[in-house]
Image (cartoon, rainbow, N blue to C red):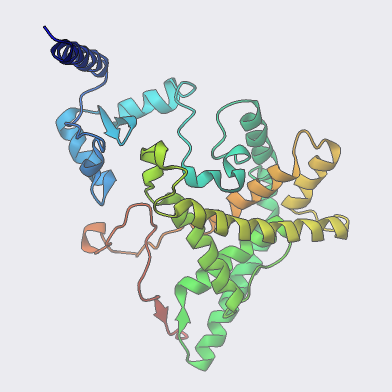
Length: 332
């Protein structure tokens, strides 16, 4: 037997052993659909992954496994299994894979939304609970909410008197943005019909979209340095602009000497007492997370069933209108 023949036989035996070993390992996973080479089950997701996963669970059960590129994923799709994951064994499942886009400007290292469960995460969560979502803080902002809603009412009334149309989406966004910025910084980011309002809306919406878009680099880590879809580059640009705006506000707040007791002043006070407990980067990225929340809202139409609507869903993108909803207000 010559050397070439021996090499082929040995290589074949080794390959068979590898296949058997992989089969044994994969047999420990929950059932799931057949996996294609390289891409795995990515094609099974389709344009509407939540619906595709619901259909797959009917065939493979409430616990199933998928291979998304090089990432093995286990899907829980029933109330009982979800309770086990989110309540009974929440500590075991508290960490998750961090998307590449969330690493823009090291956001994943400071954001309570992406940090792994640990001392830093618990510290930031405690600050959020005590400084942002406490009953006194929410009760104290009631007058602020009334003020912003009154400004929206006055704007609509003024348009009513003039008989001109109102861009409902833009007006609602401006109100939400000003309510948030007034609570955080004691200032209003934009005015109705201002270009700044539209610029902030586009910037925040672009940031939310870029982070939520399916990214090949998440499924194939080897592609991270290449950034084939340009998602990381786009997110880096948008997040950089938002952080620059927040830096300007923080510097102005420091110069004013804390005249107004808003959320930012409360965070800066913690920073002054002990920078190790809450650094400036912690504050910047915490505020960044809150500011982007204003881009996460949906339209809900009253007295209309979901099946009666053509939503034209796009995965990772909140409902958008190609033509902005405009209405002419009429006094009643």
